[in-house]
Amino acid sequence: MTLRLHRLSSEPALFTPIIFRSGINLILGEKSEGDSPQAKKVNGVGKSMSVEFIHFALLRDFAQTRVSRIPPERLPDGLTVILDLSINGETLQIRRSLAHPSEPRIIRNGQSTTFGTLAEATRFLSDLLFTGMASHGFTSFRSLISLLMRDEGSEFSDILRTMPADRTTPGDPTPHLFLMGFDLVQYRDLLQSIKDLDAQTSLVSQLKKDLTKQGSIPLADIPAGLNQDEKEVKAIEAGLAELKAEPAFEQVEADLNEIETALASLRGRRKGISYQIDQIRAMPQPEVIDETDLAIVYDRVRAGLGELVTKSLEQAKAFKAEVETFQRSLLSDELSRLDEERRKLTEQIRRLSSDHAALVSRLDRKGTLKELSAGLSVAMHKQQDYYRRVTLYDQYSEADQRKEDLKSERQLAMDGLRRHLQDHKAIEVSMNHEVSEIHQRIMGVANASFTLQLNTGAKIKHPLDFELMIPDDMSHSIERTKVFIYDCALMFASCTHGRHPGFLVHDNIFDVDQDTLVQCLNYLQEKVDDGADFQYILTLNREKIEAEERAQEIHTDITEARRAVLTKAAPFLGFRYQERRKPR
Image 1 (cartoon, one colour):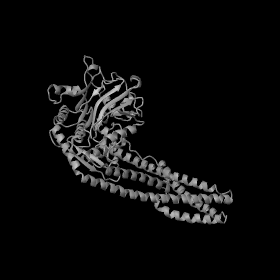
Image 2 (image 1 turned 90 degrees about the vertical axis):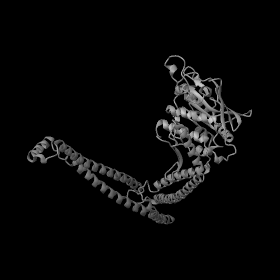
Image 3 (image 1 turned 45 degrees about the vertical axis):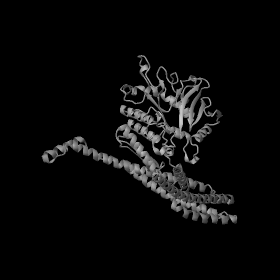
Image 4 (image 1 turned 120 degrees about the vertical axis):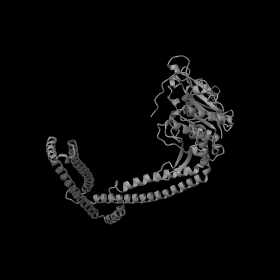
């Protein structure tokens, strides 16, 4: 599988076309001629924007590119971005206009196709790139391109994450696993089982809340309550069969008595708590010893006991302050506890009072049931409530059983992935070896490792961890070095041959020490010299390597490898502008 870029251009001509070749391709930011402060600056010349145009041409969603944030009035009408490339030996041209970004045109072997949606065009490129592979066995075209073209916005802080650092979405292991040669079915099965279990757990939780009235009724009491309600409903139904309202009336009386008893108990408890609160608030403030009095007593004691008194006056005052604070804290904590308990009791009383009022409304002023129509209303209400709760309980029981089944399915999927990783241990060994070799070449020691860790916790959402360890990791520059080593290992490891397209873009990755930068470039040049077939595109400020270039410490011919030279006087787009704010 191969992917190579050949030429990036536009119609009408907005920027100088960039011609790409195999091997190392540099897009350089350089200083302008002249002595002005602006001429010496190399940031903001459009290096990253050129990569954004490549992403746009390779069908990234328009709103997710910085191309969408260029003020339209600064761009020529009808601008079309053109990318010439080849996929698996087939020559293509992608033409995508800013006016209709969702309708790209792709020319293949002289035949032009305009796609109605971005998804159709992406699927077309996926079929070309993943030719001969079953659909379940490969990742998506865009997710793979996002891994192969890391943006500066990702900050290169994690080998898995490729999206901008301000997004909270976790990294997607799928394209990584694909490149290494793993069967994605096992991993996707596990992800789906985790997703299904999460959804089922939420359903069970919601059904339980509805069934127990937000937890006010113990779940264990539900079956017994339904049995009692069943008898009452049958009695009401029997009475209705004879057109009698009396059974319904008896049930109303029973419900009223139960509620009134509960209300009396709750109100009694609330009254007692209110009394305790009033007593505490009426208590006099704890007697506070005046510091002057304390000093007088202290001096008398010290005069009488002499050196036997070892505590200083300040220590005595501190102890006094601690005692007073402790007294206030005890009273405050007790008041807070009692206030919270009274609040909960008041809420329970409010709910029961509402239920009581609803029942009373079914009685006439003399306390008798309002004839047959009222009896029918009570009966219908009781029936509906009972059958609703029976149905809800059945749904809960079934959902809870399904949840247990999904737990078993999740465990089976977890075991399946564990076996798959174990059966393909050679992949991990290959990546580990390549990581160690690259680290040895760049850093001078082989003290680096790569492992795959399976997370088996019950609440784990992302079950697979990629661990790349090198000395002194977690620092800003070291994390970037880790990403470089990992991406190169993916491209050159034996386990990725045939799946990795030999294509890699790093946008301003080398915010590292000078020696590491030099050794990374020299490592890539050695790969070129050894005949490795790959295309590496790097954006870089020329000033980072000028001294090493003059000292001939860099083996790459920078002038020969550069594909674009961008300066403040000649930026990528030919003009300076203020990006529009990104839509939220």
